[in-house]
Image 1 (spheres, rainbow, N blue to C red):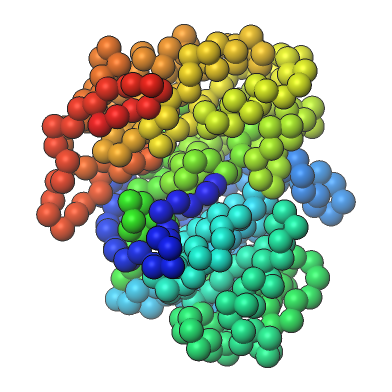
Image 2: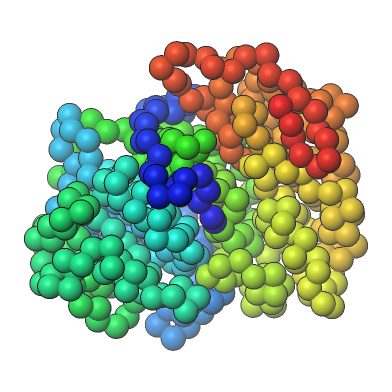
Length: 439
């Protein structure tokens, strides 16, 4: 899940705050989203992680367990002096985590605590962290201890040298450069001087539950993500609604077990895939810490999955794995190809997916600057694009037409971005040329 467009040389881009309008109710929060699914069936499988163990067993959480751990981490976040205050901008949390349970739990826990998040890719370079710290001004930073051999704890200490003498007490860190940061926590098991441990801040059974005393902040944002050189904010209702629309368009249902690498093309693509899968109480299966074609293939022998969700480039890599055949994807029925950069999967790739993976139902969600997702089902013909309901977009003979207000460039964000000048994109039309949606 690479973040692009964050840094031009060493110059950080300007932060802007935009409110994301949606047809979802303003009271449709992520906490209610999770609670409704727990109430429906707390013992239903919610999360499977092929590369992680939990208490020496393969990592498997039900909805009840996911809710319990999310609440435990939400209490830890609030304990880090992150409680929102009425009519004020809520303190912000920046995190850079791999495709682990901690990443999913942090998404839900921050929402439960009413804290907006800014997500950085696990392999984000130092410059992206600097830009995020300057523009988003987080109060709490959550990182991995290492990723692909690189020690993230060492990198963060180089950025914040005051950590070397930090006693790890909440709210005492006062960096000279990044003045907003008060706490840094890592998800590793070993002690790290000056940095708190994720597991130490989980509060399963507190005497006094701070979640019962949360006051609504004046800040309605939840997810902050870079787009076209700006930081764009999405509220909780928009995220829930976009996931719901995505799930409907992709035909997801309660019995689906979806193999999905969280590193989709963008942060917003990840959010839609995550909420889309969980909206229908489908089980989310994560194959590895970062995308690996071989790990994706191998994960089908560890967990039964009937749906595979990948980007066009990831699909190419999976198809290129030596010896790949339907026998290695036993039980696979549906392939969902997610693209939010305008790139269409080739007809050849989709054809190979039928023969090599054995997928009988192929769907493609495509977005580009100014257009909402498109959908290819059944035949897998990339030129047979059918617009999502209410997307204000039509497609005929490979030509895309959009009218009305600006529609955010992502695989699933079906709402509209309001800007200072109102609608800023009307009468858009474009053609599908060379596998790219051009407008």
